[in-house]
Length: 360
Image 1 (cartoon, rainbow, N blue to C red):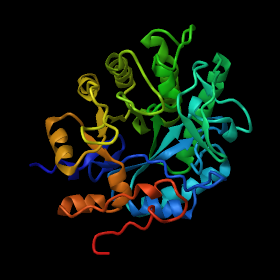
Image 2 (image 1 turned 90 degrees about the vertical axis):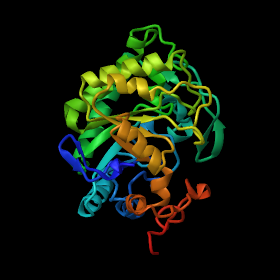
Image 3 (image 1 turned 135 degrees about the vertical axis):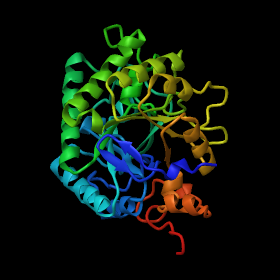
Image 4 (image 1 turned 180 degrees about the vertical axis):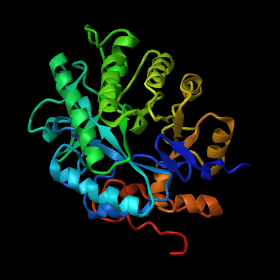
C-alpha cells in the first residue's frame, strides 16, 4: 500500500512535511489563570513532528469559557503564554494552528461569575457541566441578540489578531462538538424565529459571519474550520445532518478556506454513531480544497482514504497524545503506546508529557 500519510502537503503558504495532523484535544493543564504554561510548551514541542499541530480548544472570550483548566486567548498574558509555545514549536521544525472556541450553552454560571451562558435559543443541553464546584446540570442559556452577535464577531476577530501576534501559523474555527457555532447550525438547538433560525440558510448565517470576520483578519490561507456532522457530543441533534453539512461545506468552499476538518468516527471507535449515514463522502463532493478526516484512523485506514482521494490529510487525537513521536512510529511500523484515559484531564505531567518515545 502507498504510504501517502508521510508525503508532503501544501497548506496555503505552509509546506507540511507529512499529512499526519495532531487533532485538538482539550487537556485542562492551563490552571485557573487560563494562561498557557511551560508544561504545555513541553507537550506541544514534543509533538512538533506532526505535519500540523492544532491546539486544544481555546476560549476567544470570558463569556465563552466553560472548561476547568482550559486555556484562553483574550488577554495579553494568555497571548504571551502562547507566544512561548509557538516559538518552541517552530524552533523544533513544527507548524501550529490555534483552535478558536466559544462554548455557548454548555458553559455554566460557575465559570461566568454567576452570569447565564449564551446560546442561539433558550434550550438547555441535557447532561452535566463539570464545574469548579463539581458536576451540575446545564442551565437554560440566554439567547444571543443581534447586538450580542456583533460584539462576539469582534471578539473572534480580536482573538484571531492575538493568535497571529502570538506567532501561530493560522487558526481553526471550532464549529463542531456541540459548542456555540454548532448550536446555531442544528435545528435541535436553534429554534430562533429571526433571520438566524429556521431554514438551513438562516442557521448558517452567524457561523459564516464568524468565518468572514476571521478571514478578514487572517486571510483565507490561514483559516481552517472543524465540523462534526454525525455528532454524539453535548446533546446535539439535527433533522437532516447530511443536507445541513453538505450545504455548510459548499459555503465554506466558496470562501476558499485553507482546510475543512471533519470529525466522523469509524466503526469500532468510541465516538462511532451506530446507524448514522456517513456525511464525509458527500462533503468531499462539494469541498475540493484540503479536507482533513478524523475519527479513529489506523495507519492502514488513513492511507486507504488518502489513496482514494476521500481526504488530503488525517488527524489523530489520542494516538498523538500517547505517542509524541507518532509520525516516526508509523514510518517504522513500531508498536504504539496506549493512551491512559484516567489522566486525560488531570493536572500535571502524568499522562501528558511522560509518554515514552521510541527507545526510551
